[in-house]
Image (cartoon, rainbow, N blue to C red; front, side, top):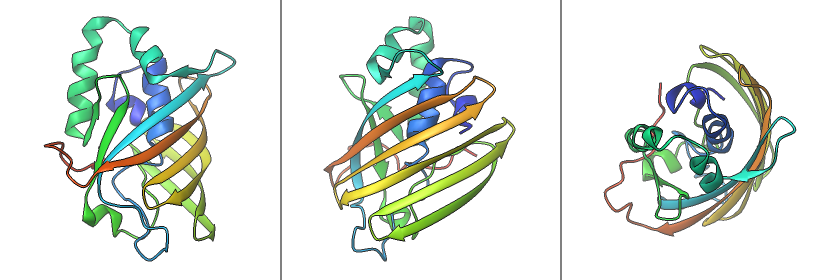
Length: 185
């Protein structure tokens, strides 16, 4: 998932965020489904592993980066409708338009082909291939309720393999000044 090129290149944080954010992005969730997600502010907790390395959460990934990189990451996230919260968790804003798009959220940078499978109202699986930068991956997304979903993913790209999982929950109808999540491309 080429969010790597949009955040900070080439870091484990960027690779992990790219995997975790795949099931977020500019096209949110399935208004026709009984499990439609609520628009508003969402919190994301993620765990990610690069290759055979240790599993890390977002706070651990951020602490491993040079402090000088953090302002750049925060600015790029904000431009795309995301921010870090006070505990180094990730927040995003899904607006009503993105929630009405009719398929799961997806956040990919680069030129990507995506295929979806939707076996039932709550579950989705995806596969994608991207160029510029080159990456491919697959994963699943389960909508537990209009205010919670989780995902698991595996990504292969120039930075090597990344796998992980993310849990998302709705916080509030207002995004508190955070712009809606948008495609980085």
